[in-house]
Image (cartoon, rainbow, N blue to C red; front, side):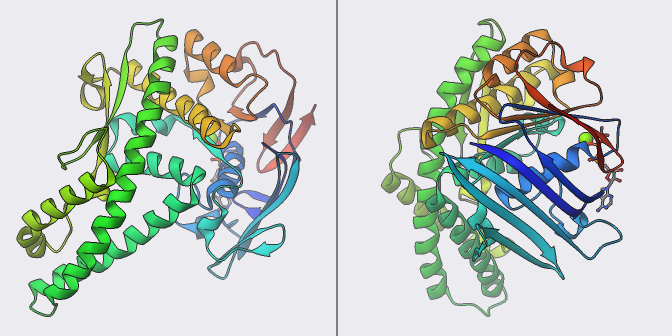
Length: 371
Ligand SMILES: Nc1ncnc2c1ncn2[C@@H]1O[C@H](COP(=O)(O)OP(=O)(O)OP(=O)(O)O)[C@@H](O)[C@H]1O
Ligand SMILES: [Mg+2]
């Protein structure tokens, strides 16, 4: 799949811009603060319905405007899709081929996208929520079933947390809590079973990639990290029973605190290199390599699951990688994955063999476009 065109109106520092992309490689070059990341962000937005760096949609509107509009043309299995996303008067609207989608999240799954930016180091050393987001978005992009279960889980969890507070204040009923527990453990077990299954697959891919990047020195393992007593073979039923047991065990404490302290919303992924947990003990280089391996395994995982590579957005990471990692990355993407690379100058990118489009960005405008 590839994105053939992008149109931006009043998006971040872009007044109006229309870009035509190369199916292979697109280089977005410009000084700092000119609008390179903004372009990648808008592409990411078309893939996921949200920005990778802000949860506040109104920040995406150009400062002197009241609305923004982003449109892209996606070519997937020789079919063309028109994807549109706009924000007007706080109303966010998404359309595919001019049909309005019911939910923003329904956009996920058309344009599959993987982004890799310097902040992704946090994927390794940052909080568990970042790793949960990583695995959830990854699975959501290939499974709308998972996406729906996940959003239902979040709804039920919210109800349950409110109810726990009500019970604490002697306003809520324990019968209703039982009903919510049944729903929560069913949805929770479905989510965990899918996460474990995906992680088992990702782990194999990430291990191979990490070995290749480090010339066989580093052995990476990904494991589902949970308070539940489960392993990477546990079934839906095992997980559900274990969730029921732990929810019961923690019930009084959860009522006292007014939050649910067990379930997939509290789980994590452990990243082990040569038997060491590198979330805590990894060197900067190991963490960077692992973040890269995770991202690259995400590409292969999606290809295996949906039969096509997603598109890849590389924001400012290229010049930060050493020769080994850079050439490995280029090998992986060369001629099979549509890739967007931002950089402050062309030289930092090293030698590029495939054909590409070049966009020179200055102050929210494309100054020069070469093919
Ligand atoms: N809502 C907005 N309206 C107008 N301008 C904005 C808005 N949000 C951000 N900007 C501006 O957009 C400019 C470009 O941002 P962007 O992050 O794309 O830069 P960049 O080219 O990636 O820079 P760097 O090389 O430093 O990463 C910034 O100067 C920022 O102040
Ligand atoms: Mg940037």
